[in-house]
Every structure is written in C-alpha cells, then in structure tokens.
Length: 258
Image 1 (cartoon, one colour):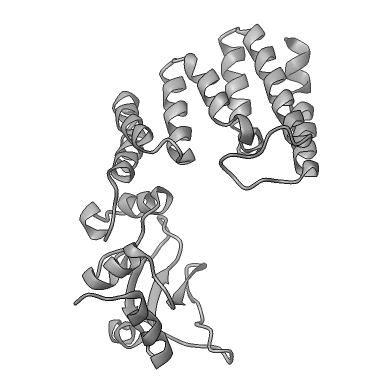
Image 2 (cartoon, helix red, strand yellow):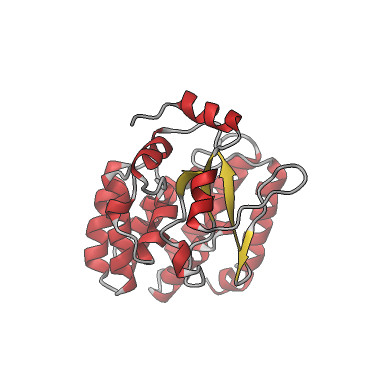
C-alpha cells in the first residue's frame, strides 16, 4: 500500500508514530540490532519486535544502551523518498555512502536497502577491496563512483588516496585543486601531512615547498574572503587563521630540512 507524507504526519498525530531505529554501526554493535538499524515501523509494531520503548516526562524516547553504545528511536513527522520506500518495503532507509558501507561491512546485503544509487554501491565495493588490499581493483570502483557524482567528497577522498597509493603523483595536484576552497579540511583530517610525507619520501623537496606555499595562500584567501568554501560549511576567519597557525607550526621541522 502506498504511503504519503501526509499519512506519516497523521500517524504521528494519532499517537502511534512511525519510528526510525538508529545507532552506531561497528564491530561492537549487537548483532541482533544490525537488521533493525535504519528501518522504520509504527510504535506498536516495534513493541511487537520486543525492543524496549520508553519515554521520559517530556515524551522523548529513551535510548537503549548496549555495550556503552546508544541506540534509539526517532519519531517521523515527515519523510523523504527513501524513508517512504523503507516503510513500504521493510528495508533500510540509509542512502549516504558513509552510512551504507558500515552496514554492508557488517553483512547487510545491497538488496536490504530501500533506495541505493549505483555510485554508493561502487563506493562500498571499493571499500571492501581496500580492506583486502586490492587497491587497483578498488580504484576501478571508486573511479566509477566519482565519475557519477563528483560533488561527493567521500568519493574524491578515496579516489585520490588510492591513486597516490598506486604512485600516481599527478593525483596530488588534482586533489589540491578539488579541495582548494576547503583546504582547512585537509589540515583538520591530517591528509595534507600525508601528502607532504609522501613527497619527502620521494625526495621531491621542490614539490613539497610548492605544496606548503599553496596551502598558505589558499588559507590566506579564505581568511580574506577571496575564496568561499565550496564543499563544507564556511568557517569564520579566526578558524582559518587557527588552521594556518596549526599547519605551519606542525611542519616547522620539516620545512627547515627542505
């Protein structure tokens, strides 16, 4: 039976809302929770499953704590296409690759998701191959994902990391251009230091100095408002100043050797 967004709102108002069960997915996640995470049922249906559903005095659903991890329910008052399909099919509503892969890694089948695009599947296959150090094959899959959706930074990150792992030096300039307006993210995540370490190991001192200059100039442009973040949320100038100070302090010894 087809379900509309209005149906979801009416169900919420009736006192028996559709509830999304979610929580962290890792090796520590109780195995019995894996099939349930990111699925949606009415509150009465969840009670039949056997999970404890309790509310506080403000009618907020209390978390379920297992092995120090927190799982819980979110009542839906609206839903996108994936959530509506999840309700209709009993499958998982997870769409983003960052949420899909951990579930796949724990044994969930692609068929268990209500709405998956081909790029997400390609990303998951790339990650699976990375885990067995089949880097060339992984690059093939992430290349497909990145070609389909170049705006997804998760794809870009893995694409460039694998290319450099396979000694494709041209990937460095391409990665820097991709993240040029978000260069602080490469500092924050430590990626910029991995690039410098690679260049130093390759005895490419001139390229390492060029990279340092590029990072500082990009940060100056962000500080002065000459550039705007393209991928991630924009930060204030103090954040970019801090990242510039952090970057240059961390590479002081390295820069002295170049």
